Length: 279
Image 1 (cartoon, rainbow, N blue to C red):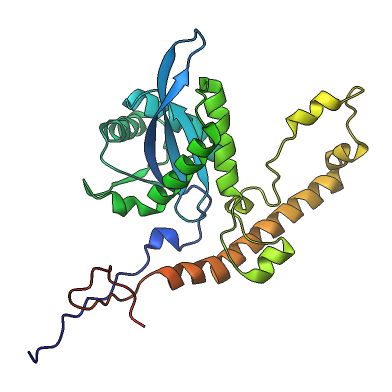
Image 2 (image 1 turned 180 degrees about the vertical axis):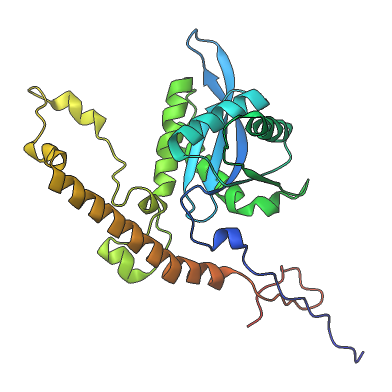
């Protein structure tokens, strides 16, 4: 045999939606996961699901609780998301009937409105191709892993489940996007939440309230931002931190994203291994 072995074609470029600077949650991937057994207020058992909203650029995550896979439950979850995060420019989802009907109802409502409202571009991935929603499928896996580890066997009430969803999302949003050694040692590793609230703290030591001996008294420092100069300085600091976050995203996170992205595939005939990047 003198023929040359088959050569794999070059892989496509990184999607534009993931490498262009945009506001957080401008481009959103969404999906449902579950079912999850819950404990209703009357003691009966019920079922709930999670709806995950993922920012394609910053990797931010937002999770809402829904009680079935209907379009009505999805639209209510989307309304809550929009009230907190704003209207996305583009949504990417699978072809679930709840998403398809929800998209149609939203577009009809926008078309019928007398006001000029922002149109949401909606992209449905190819049926039976979950890997095309890879950027949110991986985060769903992370959320489910953390959830099942934390829940153990106890059934949660709807409000408890909502709280756990928010705290899991906060934990994922606080993970470093970059793995540069200097960043980690200095405590300045870039996190998804830095794009919406730099230096945000996510731990609320509620258990410490049990040890309080006297009434809570707010410190004088909390009133500093009420002054004009304090407000200006706070805005300036926030804007500078946001600018630094985007610069770090460009110089480090995108570099690592491209490094992990396969540009070529190569594999020996008969090898059971998946094709890997050509060296």
